[in-house]
Amino acid sequence: MGLNCGASCVRYVLFAFNIIFFLGGAAVLGVGIWIRVDTGSYYDFLGKVDGSGESTKVVANILSDNISYIHAVAYVLIGVGAFVFLVGFLGCCGAIKQARPLLVAYAICLIVIMGIEMGVGIAVGVNKDKALKTIEDELTKWTAFYDYRETSVNNGLLVSGRLVNATGDASMTNGWNAMQVYLGCCGVRDYTDFKNSPYARNGGQSHAPAFCCKMSDKPTLKLQDPACGLPGADRNLGNSNFKTGCLSKVTSFVEDNAPAVIGVAVGIGLIELIGVIFAFCLCCAIGDKGKRYN
Image 1 (tube, one colour):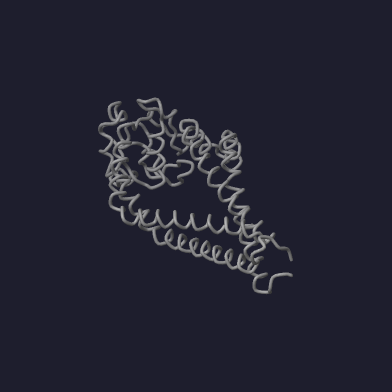
Image 2 (cartoon, helix red, strand yellow):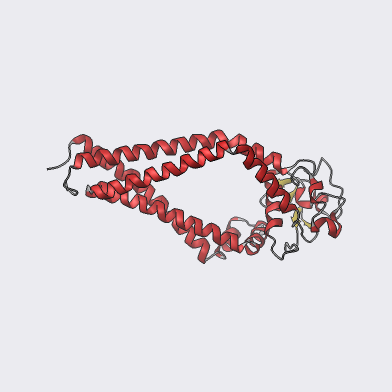
């Protein structure tokens, strides 16, 4: 005996929803594995996208200097992708096979996910000021490692040697440079935050880093004023962001995007809640046999 019309609709909607979940998890899992085993293939991909090759060089340096962090991101993607893949699999199989144990397991997974999301949301809301203070403290710590070989300019593009610092790990410098370029800022509150850094001790005391210069094209590091990128250049409000701190930019970025993030989170939560309701409704419709086919 088959399901009634309403239960059949729930079954197929649940199946279709979880096909998307399943494929999304597989995609994230695949990207994670790709990043972990074949980081170098990014260079070929970027070379096809970027004809100038300049952004490829920049990203290549960042990847090579931050390989441990890249691998950590890969492991996170693999873990998240595998979990989403599993949840989608449970939902698909539970719906199409009308298997109550799989549907219950699927619903429990969604409830756990919703609980984690709610916990994270509450923690972020309650500790907002503390989080901002932590960000400020961490950014300040990063300035102590900021260093790079002095930049040069080639056809209006900012060029530097391999990024280095006192620890032999350029991740802090790379992080600062990327943030300063893409957010249009300099230092935590302004360029003077670098006064105790290796960059300042090696001759950069009197001027802002070249990566604080304003860019007309950020991916390729094309300078708005090519003179700004020259060693010892006069960096002013017209060609540099040296008076604009990154802390205010990060804070503004978070506040400006908070409504969109909250909206997306609420939307995802509602979809997950509907998935739980549909799973339990289908369980009730199937009955106590555990498994039944149309």
